[in-house]
Length: 302
Image (cartoon, rainbow, N blue to C red; front, side):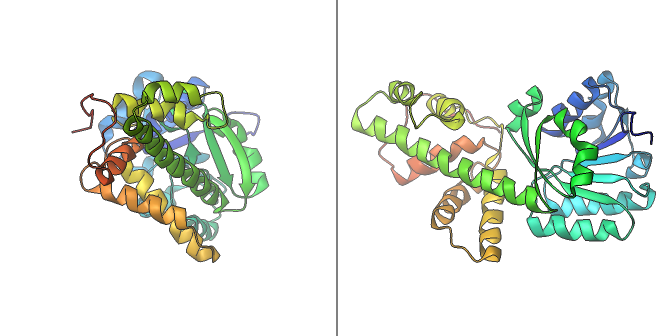
């Protein structure tokens, strides 16, 4: 590839996040081969100029292969299936949320075949994916980051945080802050309700002070509206919390608040796995059976 030209990209995983991310690459003039296990999801990108790959063997010409899949085992299975057709020197960028250890192991396997690898998980949800404003946390060699930076920045803001696996570690730090703050916002609004204050007015009063956050702004309103249609899903946040506890154990640190947050999300897995992560309000309400935030009906995915 002439490095003055735009690299050819294969995007594997055209779901809630993958669809707008791949669309933004197309808008920036990149040639994108789109693959998804359910082909119809990839076909939704044809009108934007994507080439739909029916099989993984069709992506072998790509210079950069991006994965946005459910979890580490799926990422490894898809990449190893495609591996025999990948060009030597091509770069795999996994933007899924996986375990740090999974990223490191996959990198080692690809290195034996002269395939480069970076882990680059994202934060910002569907809204950020659509707006190309995702926070992208990248683990890998500096040279690989330099090679892919313009591609990543077409989807958001990329930051190199360390060696392979460190992107996933940074994402876990992000998700710990997100998960904890969601729980605190739910508890704060429920406390306002129980104490006789107007919880919507309390949220407005808090904004602009030290308690202001994107979560108070967006998810606080979701809780007040009881609108739990996804964005980020309960099952994804729970998976992240489990990975946080694994990373903590591997690093020899104890995270007592993370353990409590994980239990709260675990309580929602059976009843509301596809709900937005702001549905943590339901777990807090379950503990406080006599108190409910507002009078609106719950909006939940079927």
